[in-house]
Amino acid sequence: MNKKLNVAILGATGAVGQRFIQLLENHPWFKVAEVVASERSAGRRYGDAVHWVVDGLPPQDVANLIVKPLGGHLDSPLVFSALPKEAAVEIEPELASAGHVVATNASAYRMETDVPLMLAEVNSSHLGLIDIQRKARNWTSGALAANSNCTIMPVVMALAPLLKFGVTRLHMVSQQATSGAGYPGVASLDILDNVIPYVSGDEDKMPIEARKMLGQFNGQAIVDLNVRASTTCTRVPVIDSHLVHISVELESKPSMTEIIDSWSSFRGLDPVPRLPSSPALPVQHISLQDRPQPRRDRMAGNGMASVVGRLRPCEILGYKFFTLAHNTIRGAAGSSIQNAELMAVCGYIDGFSPEI
Ligand code: NAP
Image 1: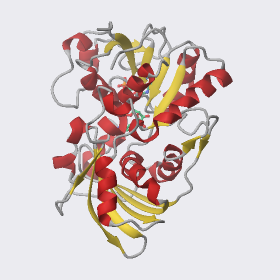
Image 2: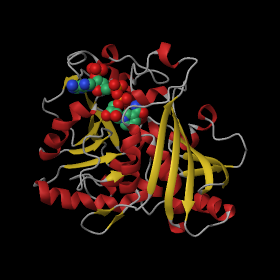
Image 3: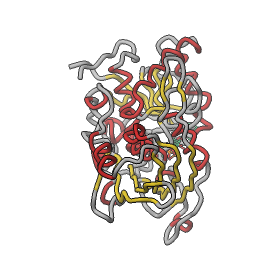
């Protein structure tokens, strides 16, 4: 077996950073060797600096690491970023330029034309942008790959198997968990016993990220999917997982059975289904009429599956259904780890080529 690759986590004390640490405990290829956070936490033992909000406790070896400040030297070849956009904007290209492979959750570079915006089962070919990026930016072994906004993620996963029917128009309404706003996020007096019909920034990001993620890589650039989309985002008193209701227009008017079969047979291209973090079924269809539900379905596929249900005719666009995914696992840290696994297998991490 290969020696494990040391990884650093930027923003390690936040909602997504903690999820990275939880998911990487016992990871077959990667080992958390460095944790980085703000001045508030730097210099402290991780176990003392973090306010742990995910289940269980931080693994002891990580709890004993001393939190590093942002901008200091890092030894780890692979860096996972769970920084706010403002903190990510300078450091991520700096680290890539210094030879690190950076897998980021921040939105700072998602829409750069040479940065792949990955959802591995959907667009593994987009990783080819790294060759373009390295040439354009004069990066030799470094790279920058992003994963998407956590609310568009379950939409993209549900639509990818339907692209063959011609996806032309979309209407999306989200019900987003509080952990999507990070920690401490939304104040309890705002969200308990309430629904907030506004989530800052997400309505703009969702359509543009979907067009890029569902687009085609032509060897040089991504050609966006041509789809019209209307979006409404809301925040609900759920801890984890975003539920999105979608109405969709499909050009070739498939039957409901064809849609369900397309979801159930969807796997992504090899080697994605064989990566350690890939779920056996990336899109799980539930036929019960009151599912998917956040509490019951967010851990499908260890939190890495999208769960779809309530497929029915839509009087305006043709079909409508719900899709759900765990926002800090599949919508953030879990996808980033899977992207890094794919980059490793595809030879983008110098000197580290795990066998699968
Ligand atoms: P969060 O809970 O607010 O955590 C932010 C983390 O960044 C903390 O570790 C914080 O450290 C650190 N940090 C803040 N400013 C810093 C600075 N100037 N220098 C160094 N470290 C700094 O946020 P989050 O929800 O985990 O989100 C992290 C990123 O992932 C964001 O870009 C977000 O948009 C993206 N994202 C989040 C989700 C989600 O569901 N939450 C999903 C997808 C993507 P201290 O604890 O020391 O302050």
